[in-house]
Amino acid sequence: MKVLEICEAYGGGVKRQVDYLNQFDDTKDIEMTTLVSSKRGAEIPNKYLVDDRLSAFPKHPFRYLSLMKCLHKLIIEKNIQLVHAHSTIAGIAMVVYKLCYHDEIPVVFTPHAYFSEVDRGWLKNVLLKIAEKFMSHFFTKVIHVSADEEDYALTNKLVKQSQSVVINNGVPFHEYEKISHANIDFVNVARCDFQKNPQLFIKIAQKIIKAIPDSRFIWVGDGPMLNECRAEVVRLGLEDKIQFVGFRTNPYTYLEKSDIFISTSRYEGQPFSVLEAISEKMPLIITDVIGHKELVDDNGVLLTDEIIADDAQLVAAFRRVINHEPEYSQASYRLFAKKYDVMNMVDAIEQIYLSGVAA
Image 1: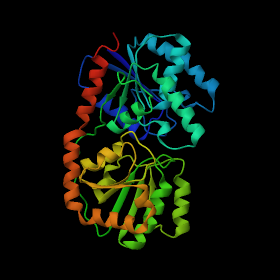
Image 2: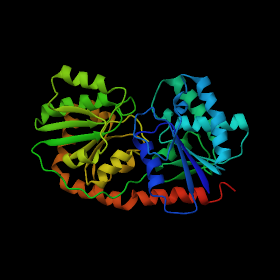
Image 3: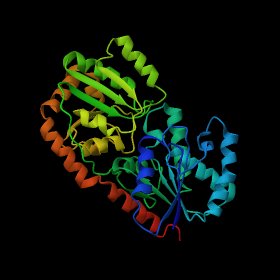
Image 4: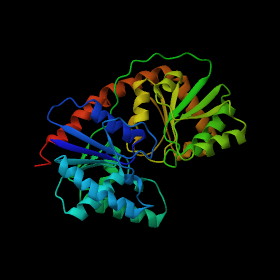
């Protein structure tokens, strides 16, 4: 089976899934070709193909359309039998490709979170759901990375039940050694962008630092809002307490040096950074959104809108996690071992490839 992995959003969790599929593929029955864009700035393995026209949508539609001819040539020359499109822009590319060439090649799509999950106003919400439902007609299978994500898609009729399958994301077991320190360190590993909501991270950090003075907050990750967030921290005079350190090649280093993982995302598919945190036995404080809900199981707190809006409840939630850190740490690791090992993810996706969808 010759498979094309196509990914515009080559960064963050999408990058991890694409890389893990390549790294942990242990069957001789599948030959992968991987096409990505370099616009996210991540280091790209030499064996991957790169075409930045994948990132031309929606600002440069004609440049984006010019990609289709090269994509068709690649599929023909490599004798590709199935395409796996990762995230929305890659999914759009395959929809446009099939409209242009009337190609019956099967396409597996992993949205890694739907754009319509976050409220963008009534009109945009409706238009996004119409677009996402239209796209699904071109996909043989849609892989949802969490049961919550699938439930959202089915409830909003974005996909058919027969199309949908849930395959949890997974991460490798990582040997680690916790580094002792005097402070209580909270860490997030994520792109610094709208989806990940760094403004809320700063807002929460400011309140917790006031109530718990020996706490520190660290955000690991690059993105379009990085400089804005750094400037806001300086404006607040909290440079020693809140750090936006930018991109790091080995985020595990920061997990090992920290105590509790915090995520303020507006929406998610199923974030690899949180899975990495529970593999490191870290308690969680994460927002109550799709993709997060399944990851809190006696190992932390889901931050509801009510908790976030009430300073007393917010501080109490943080204190509860701090006070129960040993128990929550063990619960995190049990959850990782039970559901989120990388080989479970890779094997399940490969079974989709080999299941006859390309027949």
